Structures are given as C-alpha cells and as structure tokens.
Amino acid sequence: MEKQLDRVMDDVLSNPGVIGCVFADHQGLCLGAKGKASTDSAGIIGAITDQAAKLEPQHKSPVIVLENDTRTCIIQRSGTITGAIYKNI
Amino acid sequence: MGCCYSFFCNEDGSPQRGEPSERTHLLVDPVSNNSNIPIYNSEDFLSNSNALPKKTDEQSALNRILQETATNVIDVAALDSHNLQQHEYVERMRQYSLKLQQACASNKLPPRTKMCLLQDIPAPEKVLSSESVNPDDLRLINSAVTRAAAAISDIKVEHKEDMVVMFRVPD
Image 1 (cartoon, each protein chain N blue to C red):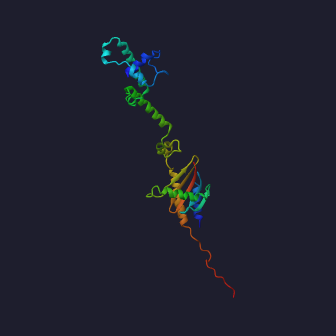
Image 2: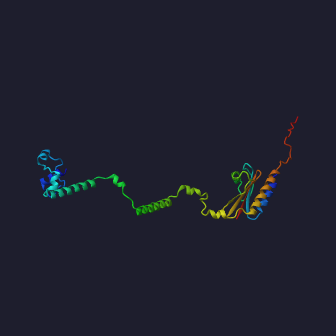
Image 3: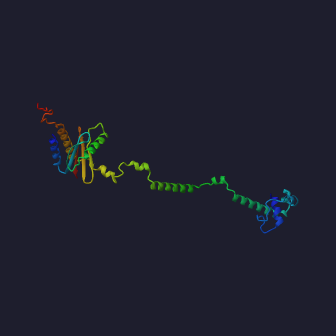
C-alpha cells in the first residue's frame, strides 16, 4: 500500500542537505512524514499552497520557498498531493 | 471745544494744566459756562497778537488730546495696512518652509510608511536582488511531488479476506 510513498520519502531524505519531508492530501491531511518534519504541519502546508495558487490562477501550481538563516522549506503541489521538503542551508 | 479748554486753563492755573486730575470737572458747570466763557471769533485769532500764545497753547493741547485718543483707540483698519517689505516676504517664506520641513521630518506621514510592503526587512533590495530558488531544489521538489502523487494513486486496497463472512449457525 504505502510502501511506494515510503520509498519516495526515503529517496528524498537521501539527498544532501535534506532533513525532513512531509506530504499532505488535498484536504491537508497528512499522508506521510519522515525526518525532522511534523505531521501537524501538513494542514498548514496545504493551506499555504492554496493561498499561493490564488495569486496567479492561470499558471500551474507554484513552488513556495520559505527561508530563514539556517533552513529552507520548499513546498509544491502536484495534482492533489502537496509535498514539503526541509533543507539545511 | 477749544473754548472750553481755554476756560479751564485760565481758571485753575495749576501746574498740571490740562492734565486730568481729581479736581478737574468731568462736566462743565452750565451756569459758569454761560457767564464766564470768553467767546473768540475767528477774526480774533487772526488779528489779535495777544491771542497768539493762547492759540499755540490750544494747538498743543489739541495735539495732546489727539495723541491720547490715538493711543487709546485700536485702529483695526490700520493693522491690516501694515505693508510687508520684499525682504520680509522672503524671510517669512524661508521660515515657513523650514518649519514645514521640520514638521514633516518629526511626524512620519502615514501614506509614506504604507508605501513599503517589506517593512520588517531592513534592506529589502538585498533580499529582492538575491538569487531565486536553487534549480537543484526545484528539481528535487518536482520529482518528489510527482513521484509521491504517483505512489498515492497506486494505493489500492489489497483484498485478502472475504468482506462478508457467513456465520454458520450450528443447527
């Protein structure tokens, strides 16, 4: 069942600098989280994507990058799935 | 009026001539007024040489009255007619513009502060001019999300047991 998604998350975490990832469905419910990522953030990530997509509705789903001095959070939606990857800078 | 005044001067002869004091009458006694006032004609002033000092006296007294009246009266119309000189205009203009600049500097105008969206960032040009998203990150998130979406769509319920189980009730 969700083995395929687990494998995808493991692959993502194997990338250099990546410390965590989380995936949410179209309602913001958590599908899976690995590494330093909270399952609670799934809803917030979904909401951020919804709001960002309203800026330019004619374009496809945008990539949102939240950044501070030490980390970045990259968010994108594909179909009904929203993914977020946390990286150390 | 001039006649009345000369009458007073002649009568008391005090050092405070013409000056109002506690002894000066506010109203002229009508009886003495009728009897004692010497009446001067205009010819008398012109022709009689003896009347000359009296005339100058009278003139100075009139001038004094005029001055006193002028000091007591606030002439509103005259206030407006104070003409500003050219250099005064320039000086005032400079003064006002200086005051205006000071007022603008001390009170930040609300529309100006609202112009900047990135108020919490001290140097927005630095942030805005920094390079955009790393292409590697873009590639990473793209592949991860598409693969995750594919993985989710592959999720199927594996049928292992019968959903409906017949309870065999022993006969």
